[in-house]
Image 1 (cartoon, each protein chain N blue to C red):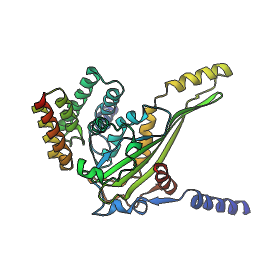
Image 2: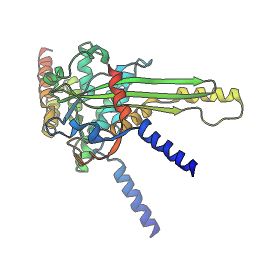
Image 3: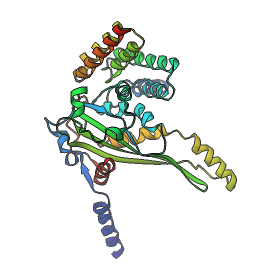
Image 4: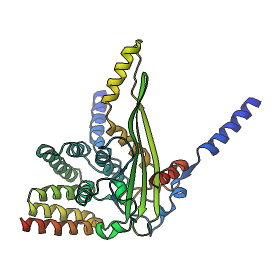
Length: 229
Length: 119
């Protein structure tokens, strides 16, 4: 009996202390306000903190679908990124100091999405290896410059596979599998997991009905805000 | 009877899988766009253009709204190969479907039509 009580206490402690979960409405009240909820999103060039130089460019091909599917009008990223490039902006840190409202006049959007790529790399630990993709998302109102939504998401994919029973063979096998691992599908999973906490936009058939969904890890919401500072 | 049920399931799955949770048909969008970023060339541009046309055609066929940005992206590719009239038609279609795109596209159009006059 003592054991069960102890277990129960531990569980409650774990649930409340370690992983505080909020509903979408609690976490992002502005996304449920008639006046503040955005319809359109401008995705600006990502801040790349990873070691992969091409990650910021490649990530562009994965962003339109999840955000559009969630009910938002995403300004065509291919055109937008060309415009930024023409102005010499290829990486997000170059515009990090600008208020989001700067983009309202030029792009006519009501929100700006800032993305930070925190991890896009491979870790080798003798015979084990994994590929990690981690990103932070911060959606800011282009009218008030206030944060509307934020989330931090990381996914680690183990690339070691089954052991052959021979250490040297395992090392070679792991190295080959890891080198061939494509980051893009992992990045898509990261996007999907993060966007599952984003309240539905006006083009989504279920807009306004998801406020009670308890899916927002408070720590992840707050972590994203610290990454971009 | 079993075979009929199987056919129904296959038909249903085949019909549904291509429409995203948001109710859009995206075709090969992320693949051809990824290739275009990774290796910009006439070939990857042509492949992406074909994807965009395919999305527009299938969406019409399935009676779905064309996803955000597709008409505009096609317009932009047409403009860069100096097909300004065709480009304008695509931009107009985007603005009609998504009025939020108007400010951005009108600026883009005025820049591009000026550019094509200069040439």
